[in-house]
Image (tube, rainbow, N blue to C red; front, side, top):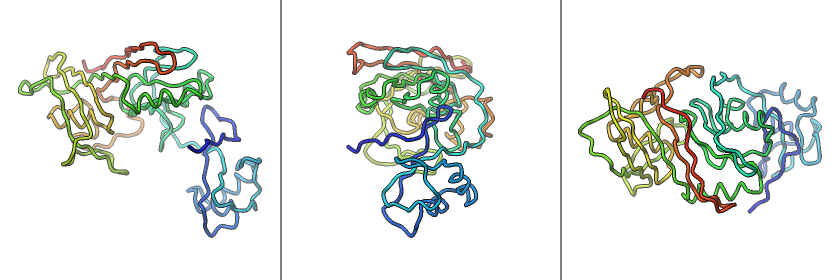
Length: 300
Protein backbone atom coordinates (compact mmCIF):
# COMPACT_ATOMS: atom_id res chain seq x y z
CA UNK A 1 0.00 0.00 0.00
CA UNK A 2 1.36 3.39 -1.02
CA UNK A 3 1.95 5.90 1.75
CA UNK A 4 -0.42 8.83 1.54
CA UNK A 5 1.46 12.11 1.05
CA UNK A 6 0.54 14.75 3.59
CA UNK A 7 -0.38 18.08 2.07
CA UNK A 8 2.24 20.81 2.55
CA UNK A 9 -0.62 23.34 2.64
CA UNK A 10 -2.85 23.77 5.69
CA UNK A 11 -6.61 23.43 5.46
CA UNK A 12 -8.58 26.54 4.58
CA UNK A 13 -12.00 26.91 6.21
CA UNK A 14 -12.13 23.16 6.83
CA UNK A 15 -11.19 22.22 3.26
CA UNK A 16 -8.04 20.34 2.30
CA UNK A 17 -5.83 21.67 -0.45
CA UNK A 18 -6.29 19.91 -3.78
CA UNK A 19 -3.56 17.45 -4.74
CA UNK A 20 -2.91 17.21 -8.49
CA UNK A 21 -0.85 14.25 -9.67
CA UNK A 22 1.24 15.01 -12.74
CA UNK A 23 1.02 12.47 -15.60
CA UNK A 24 3.84 10.05 -16.30
CA UNK A 25 4.59 11.89 -19.51
CA UNK A 26 3.44 14.66 -21.80
CA UNK A 27 4.42 17.65 -23.91
CA UNK A 28 4.66 20.18 -21.06
CA UNK A 29 7.96 21.86 -20.23
CA UNK A 30 6.67 23.45 -17.01
CA UNK A 31 4.11 22.77 -14.32
CA UNK A 32 2.46 26.04 -15.32
CA UNK A 33 1.93 24.79 -18.88
CA UNK A 34 0.32 21.60 -17.59
CA UNK A 35 -2.03 23.48 -15.24
CA UNK A 36 -3.14 25.76 -18.07
CA UNK A 37 -4.13 22.66 -20.06
CA UNK A 38 -5.52 20.73 -17.10
CA UNK A 39 -7.55 23.28 -15.12
CA UNK A 40 -10.77 24.85 -16.43
CA UNK A 41 -9.85 28.34 -15.19
CA UNK A 42 -7.75 29.86 -17.98
CA UNK A 43 -4.12 30.98 -18.24
CA UNK A 44 -4.64 34.30 -16.44
CA UNK A 45 -5.93 32.65 -13.28
CA UNK A 46 -3.17 30.04 -13.36
CA UNK A 47 -0.57 32.83 -13.63
CA UNK A 48 -2.24 34.64 -10.73
CA UNK A 49 -1.91 31.47 -8.61
CA UNK A 50 1.82 31.35 -9.29
CA UNK A 51 2.24 35.07 -8.52
CA UNK A 52 0.49 34.47 -5.19
CA UNK A 53 2.86 31.52 -4.54
CA UNK A 54 -0.25 29.37 -4.16
CA UNK A 55 1.02 26.33 -6.11
CA UNK A 56 3.37 24.19 -4.05
CA UNK A 57 5.11 20.84 -4.00
CA UNK A 58 6.74 19.10 -1.04
CA UNK A 59 9.65 21.56 -1.17
CA UNK A 60 7.52 24.70 -1.11
CA UNK A 61 6.00 27.26 -3.52
CA UNK A 62 6.73 26.79 -7.22
CA UNK A 63 7.88 29.46 -9.65
CA UNK A 64 6.08 29.84 -13.02
CA UNK A 65 9.04 28.23 -14.79
CA UNK A 66 9.24 25.21 -12.46
CA UNK A 67 9.92 22.18 -14.68
CA UNK A 68 7.27 19.56 -15.27
CA UNK A 69 8.24 16.41 -13.32
CA UNK A 70 6.48 13.28 -14.62
CA UNK A 71 4.66 11.48 -11.82
CA UNK A 72 5.10 14.33 -9.35
CA UNK A 73 2.43 16.10 -7.32
CA UNK A 74 1.45 19.70 -6.69
CA UNK A 75 -1.05 21.20 -4.25
CA UNK A 76 -3.21 24.32 -4.28
CA UNK A 77 -6.52 25.52 -2.87
CA UNK A 78 -9.34 25.40 -5.38
CA UNK A 79 -11.65 28.33 -5.99
CA UNK A 80 -14.94 27.50 -4.31
CA UNK A 81 -18.08 27.30 -6.46
CA UNK A 82 -21.16 29.36 -5.66
CA UNK A 83 -23.27 27.30 -3.27
CA UNK A 84 -26.72 27.80 -1.81
CA UNK A 85 -26.42 27.47 1.99
CA UNK A 86 -28.29 24.42 3.27
CA UNK A 87 -30.67 25.86 5.90
CA UNK A 88 -30.32 23.07 8.45
CA UNK A 89 -28.02 22.39 11.37
CA UNK A 90 -26.03 19.20 11.90
CA UNK A 91 -27.12 17.28 14.98
CA UNK A 92 -24.45 15.70 17.20
CA UNK A 93 -25.62 12.24 18.27
CA UNK A 94 -22.39 11.01 19.91
CA UNK A 95 -18.82 12.18 20.37
CA UNK A 96 -15.84 10.62 22.11
CA UNK A 97 -12.08 10.62 21.55
CA UNK A 98 -12.33 8.28 18.56
CA UNK A 99 -15.57 8.86 16.68
CA UNK A 100 -18.27 11.41 15.97
CA UNK A 101 -21.80 10.36 15.01
CA UNK A 102 -24.06 12.99 13.49
CA UNK A 103 -27.55 13.45 12.15
CA UNK A 104 -26.96 14.76 8.63
CA UNK A 105 -29.81 16.91 7.33
CA UNK A 106 -31.40 16.49 3.92
CA UNK A 107 -29.64 18.27 1.02
CA UNK A 108 -26.22 18.37 2.76
CA UNK A 109 -23.57 16.26 1.03
CA UNK A 110 -21.35 14.13 3.27
CA UNK A 111 -18.07 15.13 1.59
CA UNK A 112 -16.97 17.61 -1.10
CA UNK A 113 -17.89 16.57 -4.61
CA UNK A 114 -18.79 18.47 -7.76
CA UNK A 115 -20.55 21.73 -6.99
CA UNK A 116 -20.96 20.87 -3.29
CA UNK A 117 -17.76 21.78 -1.44
CA UNK A 118 -18.12 24.15 1.51
CA UNK A 119 -21.75 23.13 2.03
CA UNK A 120 -20.88 19.59 3.10
CA UNK A 121 -21.00 17.85 6.44
CA UNK A 122 -17.25 17.14 6.52
CA UNK A 123 -16.18 20.73 5.85
CA UNK A 124 -18.74 22.21 8.25
CA UNK A 125 -17.73 19.85 11.06
CA UNK A 126 -14.00 20.34 10.60
CA UNK A 127 -14.48 24.08 10.77
CA UNK A 128 -17.15 24.36 13.48
CA UNK A 129 -15.73 21.70 15.83
CA UNK A 130 -12.05 22.45 15.13
CA UNK A 131 -11.40 18.86 14.04
CA UNK A 132 -9.04 19.22 11.05
CA UNK A 133 -8.28 15.48 10.82
CA UNK A 134 -11.93 14.40 10.77
CA UNK A 135 -12.82 11.88 8.05
CA UNK A 136 -15.98 9.90 7.16
CA UNK A 137 -16.14 6.16 7.79
CA UNK A 138 -18.94 5.91 5.20
CA UNK A 139 -21.27 8.22 3.26
CA UNK A 140 -24.92 9.06 2.81
CA UNK A 141 -26.39 10.46 -0.38
CA UNK A 142 -26.90 14.21 -0.30
CA UNK A 143 -30.67 13.81 -0.43
CA UNK A 144 -30.82 11.24 2.40
CA UNK A 145 -30.91 12.38 6.04
CA UNK A 146 -29.72 10.58 9.15
CA UNK A 147 -26.79 8.94 10.84
CA UNK A 148 -23.22 9.27 9.58
CA UNK A 149 -20.11 8.13 11.49
CA UNK A 150 -16.90 10.15 11.29
CA UNK A 151 -13.47 9.20 12.63
CA UNK A 152 -11.63 11.78 14.73
CA UNK A 153 -8.19 10.17 14.99
CA UNK A 154 -6.49 9.55 11.61
CA UNK A 155 -4.73 6.39 12.76
CA UNK A 156 -8.14 4.76 13.42
CA UNK A 157 -9.68 5.64 10.08
CA UNK A 158 -8.90 2.29 8.46
CA UNK A 159 -10.45 0.23 11.26
CA UNK A 160 -13.82 1.97 11.02
CA UNK A 161 -13.87 2.21 7.23
CA UNK A 162 -13.05 -1.50 6.93
CA UNK A 163 -15.95 -2.29 9.27
CA UNK A 164 -18.35 -0.67 6.80
CA UNK A 165 -16.66 -2.19 3.75
CA UNK A 166 -16.95 -5.67 5.26
CA UNK A 167 -20.68 -5.14 6.04
CA UNK A 168 -20.19 -5.51 9.78
CA UNK A 169 -22.58 -2.64 10.53
CA UNK A 170 -26.31 -3.14 11.05
CA UNK A 171 -28.24 -0.36 9.29
CA UNK A 172 -31.91 0.49 9.45
CA UNK A 173 -33.60 3.10 7.29
CA UNK A 174 -37.06 4.58 7.38
CA UNK A 175 -38.95 5.69 4.27
CA UNK A 176 -42.34 7.21 3.50
CA UNK A 177 -43.90 5.97 0.27
CA UNK A 178 -47.33 5.15 -1.14
CA UNK A 179 -49.24 2.32 0.54
CA UNK A 180 -50.22 -0.59 -1.70
CA UNK A 181 -52.58 -3.03 0.06
CA UNK A 182 -51.75 -5.65 -2.58
CA UNK A 183 -48.03 -5.60 -1.83
CA UNK A 184 -47.06 -8.58 0.32
CA UNK A 185 -44.59 -7.51 3.01
CA UNK A 186 -42.17 -8.17 4.61
CA UNK A 187 -40.03 -9.43 1.76
CA UNK A 188 -36.41 -9.49 0.63
CA UNK A 189 -35.87 -7.66 -2.66
CA UNK A 190 -32.89 -8.88 -4.69
CA UNK A 191 -31.68 -7.56 -8.03
CA UNK A 192 -28.65 -6.51 -10.01
CA UNK A 193 -28.15 -2.73 -9.93
CA UNK A 194 -25.74 -0.79 -12.13
CA UNK A 195 -24.90 2.90 -11.90
CA UNK A 196 -23.15 4.41 -14.92
CA UNK A 197 -20.84 7.37 -14.47
CA UNK A 198 -22.52 10.60 -15.57
CA UNK A 199 -26.02 9.09 -15.53
CA UNK A 200 -28.11 10.37 -12.57
CA UNK A 201 -30.22 7.27 -11.98
CA UNK A 202 -29.13 3.69 -11.39
CA UNK A 203 -31.00 0.85 -13.06
CA UNK A 204 -31.76 -2.82 -12.60
CA UNK A 205 -30.41 -5.22 -15.21
CA UNK A 206 -30.59 -8.99 -15.72
CA UNK A 207 -27.91 -11.04 -14.01
CA UNK A 208 -26.63 -12.24 -10.68
CA UNK A 209 -28.09 -10.05 -7.89
CA UNK A 210 -25.64 -7.66 -6.25
CA UNK A 211 -28.19 -5.81 -4.10
CA UNK A 212 -30.54 -7.03 -1.38
CA UNK A 213 -32.96 -5.10 0.82
CA UNK A 214 -35.47 -6.39 3.37
CA UNK A 215 -38.61 -4.24 3.19
CA UNK A 216 -41.11 -4.12 6.07
CA UNK A 217 -44.31 -2.10 6.45
CA UNK A 218 -44.44 -0.52 9.91
CA UNK A 219 -47.82 1.23 9.57
CA UNK A 220 -49.99 3.06 7.05
CA UNK A 221 -52.51 5.86 6.93
CA UNK A 222 -53.96 8.25 4.39
CA UNK A 223 -52.61 6.35 1.42
CA UNK A 224 -49.01 6.44 2.70
CA UNK A 225 -46.89 3.77 4.32
CA UNK A 226 -44.02 4.03 6.77
CA UNK A 227 -41.45 1.42 5.80
CA UNK A 228 -38.43 -0.07 7.57
CA UNK A 229 -35.61 -0.89 5.15
CA UNK A 230 -32.77 -3.23 6.06
CA UNK A 231 -30.04 -3.16 3.39
CA UNK A 232 -27.83 -6.22 3.23
CA UNK A 233 -25.65 -4.69 0.51
CA UNK A 234 -24.65 -1.13 -0.33
CA UNK A 235 -25.21 -0.40 -4.02
CA UNK A 236 -25.72 3.21 -5.12
CA UNK A 237 -29.38 4.28 -4.67
CA UNK A 238 -30.25 0.72 -3.68
CA UNK A 239 -33.16 1.55 -1.37
CA UNK A 240 -34.67 4.02 -3.80
CA UNK A 241 -34.36 1.58 -6.71
CA UNK A 242 -35.89 -1.31 -4.78
CA UNK A 243 -38.92 0.59 -3.48
CA UNK A 244 -39.50 2.01 -6.94
CA UNK A 245 -39.33 -1.54 -8.37
CA UNK A 246 -42.04 -2.58 -5.89
CA UNK A 247 -44.28 0.18 -7.26
CA UNK A 248 -44.01 2.38 -4.16
CA UNK A 249 -41.32 5.02 -4.95
CA UNK A 250 -40.14 7.07 -1.99
CA UNK A 251 -41.96 10.35 -1.55
CA UNK A 252 -40.24 13.36 -3.18
CA UNK A 253 -37.74 11.21 -5.07
CA UNK A 254 -36.48 13.29 -7.99
CA UNK A 255 -34.78 10.33 -9.71
CA UNK A 256 -37.20 7.41 -9.43
CA UNK A 257 -39.37 6.67 -11.31
CA UNK A 258 -38.70 9.85 -13.36
CA UNK A 259 -35.63 12.11 -13.32
CA UNK A 260 -36.71 15.65 -12.42
CA UNK A 261 -34.57 18.78 -12.33
CA UNK A 262 -34.49 20.66 -9.03
CA UNK A 263 -32.97 24.15 -8.63
CA UNK A 264 -29.90 23.98 -6.32
CA UNK A 265 -31.54 26.34 -3.81
CA UNK A 266 -34.87 24.44 -3.65
CA UNK A 267 -35.03 22.74 -0.25
CA UNK A 268 -38.83 22.53 -0.15
CA UNK A 269 -39.43 18.81 -0.72
CA UNK A 270 -36.84 16.57 0.97
CA UNK A 271 -36.60 12.92 -0.01
CA UNK A 272 -38.48 10.96 2.63
CA UNK A 273 -35.61 8.61 3.45
CA UNK A 274 -33.82 8.53 6.80
CA UNK A 275 -30.83 6.52 8.06
CA UNK A 276 -32.40 5.62 11.40
CA UNK A 277 -30.09 3.12 13.15
CA UNK A 278 -26.37 2.22 13.12
CA UNK A 279 -25.24 -0.72 15.26
CA UNK A 280 -21.87 -2.47 15.41
CA UNK A 281 -19.15 -3.83 17.62
CA UNK A 282 -16.57 -1.08 17.91
CA UNK A 283 -13.40 -2.34 16.14
CA UNK A 284 -11.16 -0.34 18.49
CA UNK A 285 -12.79 -0.74 21.92
CA UNK A 286 -14.80 -3.94 21.40
CA UNK A 287 -17.88 -2.22 22.86
CA UNK A 288 -21.32 -2.88 21.32
CA UNK A 289 -22.62 0.39 19.86
CA UNK A 290 -26.14 1.30 18.77
CA UNK A 291 -27.09 4.79 17.62
CA UNK A 292 -30.57 6.13 16.81
CA UNK A 293 -31.32 9.19 14.70
CA UNK A 294 -33.17 12.02 16.41
CA UNK A 295 -34.66 13.19 13.11
CA UNK A 296 -38.15 12.48 11.82
CA UNK A 297 -39.55 12.45 8.31
CA UNK A 298 -41.86 15.42 7.85
CA UNK A 299 -44.41 13.70 5.61
CA UNK A 300 -45.51 11.29 8.35
